[in-house]
Length: 263
Image (cartoon, rainbow, N blue to C red; front, side, top):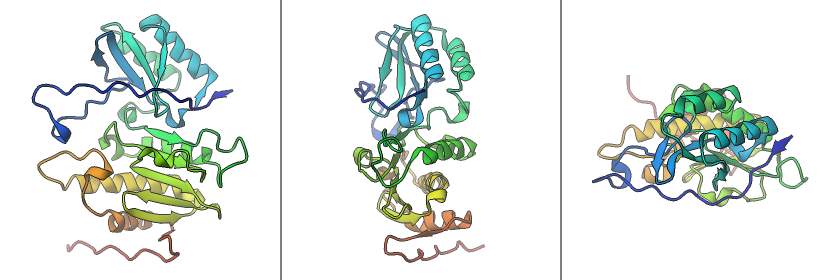
């Protein structure tokens, strides 16, 4: 039995530290291993890709909230779960509980597994594709990447089966199902069409391409694609095709190869 993504209120914004502003400060997003000090105790945010929980994992979260926190599971608008009112010094015990339940498949990636997905995909007969294989494939590829731990805890992937229910949430990387069963990959102003079976891997490669571009920005930190201020289309197409995946532009032609850096 699985619990689908439920709507929830967004967590209250966290106040920046003294002198911090915009993207000049560090990524302060809480995680399951990086707890945030709040007025009611410590807060942990457990990423639940696609908002999908098995009954066993839901019970593990409820048990942790009862033993270590305020006894309530707080749902976020991204389908993640927050535990609040956590006592000081409980981080190790919480990590053990989450690890045993399979909620921490990769400690290095625990804050970057931000994925929203069409909650009824594959269940109600609507939508052009079933995004559930994308969800598992993307999470696996994300956790297997040595690059993606560099993503911000704010970076967002969205998997839309074509009905448009999550594509409007402002994701950094969007996969949207198309009527022919393929996928539209959207990253900022860059748009491509990829095969259904390549979509999840292409989305992770696109995130890696973003990190490469963001590393070239000087004087500020870039957390989201919208903050980059530079085109990504050529870089993404080069990296995706270098991985042996097929892609085309929405018009049906293959993207032009990116210029190669001189040796």
